[in-house]
Length: 265
Image 1 (tube, rainbow, N blue to C red):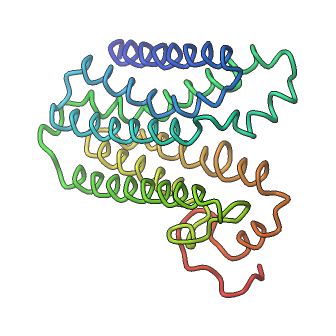
Image 2 (spheres, helix red, strand yellow):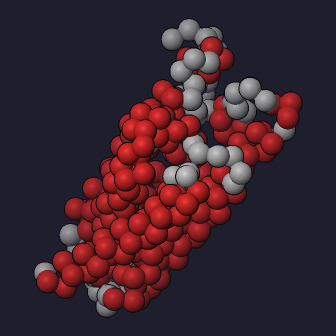
């Protein structure tokens, strides 16, 4: 038990340290959007620290760490590229306006350290999954988890790329992206990300007592649906957009499904 607590605490302080560095950069740039880019990197850091400090089954450790690294680095590159030169995210801009001169210190806790805490809790599964030496072979559950993760990363990557291409076309200025994957879900990228974490959970489920780590995919799903993802974005960026309101009436918010043929609710 002491070994578990020691590992978890070290990883918590590591995530907080990374986010604190990001906070310092945000003060220099007067832009806290860097927190978004650091989201994926925090998980990569936790995964590798766990990999080198645990004695679990090597192949499962490698699988978990590599999958987290591929997802985290892709997300870091995507968000850094997307946000470069565009100023502070409107969601954070509203918080800066609300808190005024005190936002510089409030942002440390409200943006960066709270994010580190969420990273650590969501990463409980990828930490615990690397600790277990049993079973000392890859099971069908591991393979199923890998398949779910693969579906998630494909959906998230394609959705991000499709949106990037749409926004890069000047002809689409002020238009709503409702094509390709975005025709079937208003947030297919978030749906893909939740699949990634459910896939990792299924991998961890192959280990003894791994079921308790369901807190990880449940929390990331709730976060993307109710906190920083779907709800916040639609309330802050699209609430006054009639075209987007029509899009809401026709298109599933999260799980991809066929759009309604009429604009009626």
